Image (cartoon, rainbow, N blue to C red; front, side):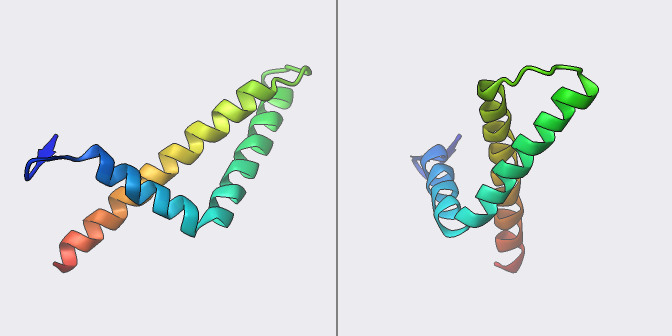
Amino acid sequence: MQISGRSYCPDVAQRLRNRLRGYWWVCLAIVVAAVILNELFDREVAGDKNGHPGGDVLVAIVVLLIILVAWDRVAVRRSRRTS
């Protein structure tokens, strides 16, 4: 997607990096919650008693990215409303 001759992706990536730096503690809490909930789901629901740390990390990264992108969309939408 092109906006005024520039690519849209670097702008989004910069906003996500700034949000990660500014709200690192929120991101850390999201990652910890995602790992804990994934472990509970694996052990209680799926019946998997063996831990898979790679899967926990992958789930945490995906959950964090989904939340950051949704957060960015809400922020962009709000800024467009006030403009």
